[in-house]
Image 1 (cartoon, rainbow over the protein chains, first blue to last red):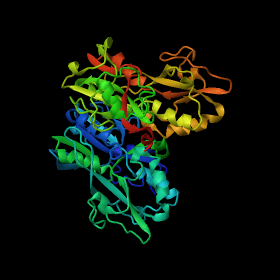
Image 2: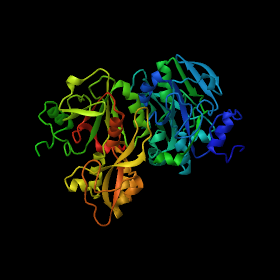
Image 3: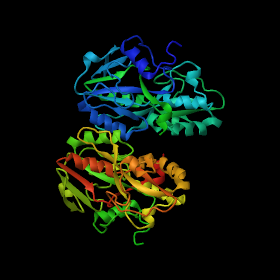
Image 4: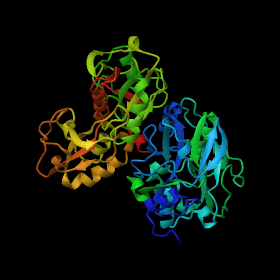
Length: 261
Length: 261
């Protein structure tokens, strides 16, 4: 592939110059990618508290200083306003535009939240011969609204959103152990088996992403999903918010293996 | 013992009525005890961010809604203003009084932070035949200032404080594994061996707590300590803060074993 062998910093530089504006899936294998939420400071306490109270669904990898465009920890020097390929702008909870750079929108009261993503544990699943169906089928992972309530915090509230991977029965304990070792990217499953038990009516109709094949002898396994905080965010309709566009994430300098420790 | 067999809720009720005002060490074995920090809302964002950035030293078990005196999660219904045996009041970073009840000081802008404590993993160490020297010697655990910087957040900054337990060389890997399984109560050690490597000059002179015997064939093992956030708190001199008095902690309804998951 054209981008094989590039470091996360090199890919971020391409993105910054808008020489790469596509999805980040598959780029820099082995390195963690992060969801982005940018909020004015007036909402930051409630959002930080929502994350603290719902760490499984909303594992924070980094929170910036107020007004800072630059990351210090997971990708030192990365520019939040230009180093993701695509952003979404929300005003009062309504998507109003999509952009490849948000430098001209930047405000001194912005706080950025970088949130871990379950993609980080899929490499370990595959390495251990646990199938990851949506990768096999070239699809986006299926995600579902549930009736599992999140702990609310100030204006932020909502139910947990989960991602689903069908796992052969005999590999379920291994899948639990592998993912449990990475709590900073959602960790162990929240539910195994009957979708109705967590309020999911029909696995063939995901609320986000795409349905995948569930084969004979496989059980649906559900993990807390980073769409949870985005959903809580949009439901609460803050006056202004910026997120990454789906699939267009921050590529960090953190190796997935280091998310175990 | 007089309090054997009482539930955490029963002991908290005794404490609430001031029928018990002593240290909580040894009460309700198997249940997690928590450190308390109460701050006016104006400091809460910085403190929450400090905890997010330093999760090893400052593992939050619960953060209350602003103004709420009552816990919802780790000890539902527990009254923060009366259910700890002893509190310390700080004004501009100076200890001004110690009390057994803070109901008359309560303000609608208070936020309470309950912080995990390494006592929670000592039961597992003992159960696995790993010695815990300060318990053997009937002392408070020795704690030391280090030169390991914390990530600062707003007004809060400082170096990590560590607790030390001497462990026989052959048991060190086991001690690492046991404590690593409980990240919500500080988790794995931050350092094993030479104290000078983390800025500790003399193990016989701890900065907090009491020195313990280190025997032939034992190595000092250092864990992040909950005194870290208290120190950062006092250094930054907020106008007002309340903490538990040392050793006089909140007894939660959370079993230590459940802190692993």
